[in-house]
Length: 370
Image (cartoon, rainbow, N blue to C red; front, top):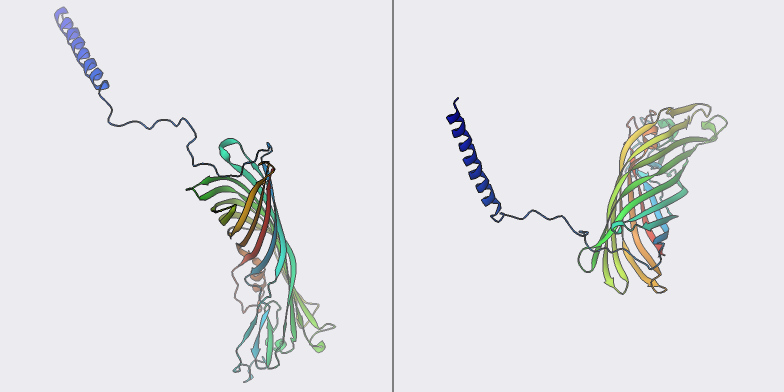
């Protein structure tokens, strides 16, 4: 390549570069088609709606009295059937319908205690609450005059049904739950606020069920009772989330509506079944597991009620009282029924699915912010 061609190539590159630079500069001077969303210069959220007192502690505590009825599927005591109960007897089935003796679920006192802290950052708060319900309830059933009494937990043949004169069942529940929530209250309109919360649910649920069948003295050796004992202990841990609403009615009165849902890992670490033979008290049927049973189970909670609150002592304190109806359901908790069904003859060979545990009743809460 000679010198003239090199000069011509350099001149062409310079001319092309100048033309491209001019076009690029002209495009930069044109207005943009749209604006890029700017970076927020301040917090972008709805107005906070939590309780704020003048005291620097920014702590609140609550105490709740509960009058709850706990009921669980699969705890039926037994049922009665017309006739003698002897196979082949024409009087086994009569015009009288069968009657199911369900467990008599009673209302029991319980409590909650909670402690919270208002976080400075973005108006969030942290709240830890403990719920305890512990009781033992008893239900009895008697043999009808025109039929037989068939137990749901004692292993017995049709010939033994004739001798069963009564059943007594005891259910013991030890319910202990911890809820740790991180939440934020905010206005949605002028008279309505919401609180979004995320957290953890943990604790333990222990149960025991005992049924005693009463028979004539001649039916057993040195005994006139047959006893069945079931046991189920478990602990649980998992995430939870909820949305709590508050309608401001005026003069400190509010309508409250809360709902939460949890999904937790649950380990049944101790579960067993011990059944005494109705024809020989020295003969025991056992179903005991040496391994842990693991499951992932859900729970739901719902609360509806009214509260009233006001500031005290030049806004250094805040007092709040709540009266509400509350309902909680923990799914697939009655493992005892499944254990009993694995022993042939208790439920006709059919194994029941674990029943749900439900708790509901009065919630009376007092809260102080200080």
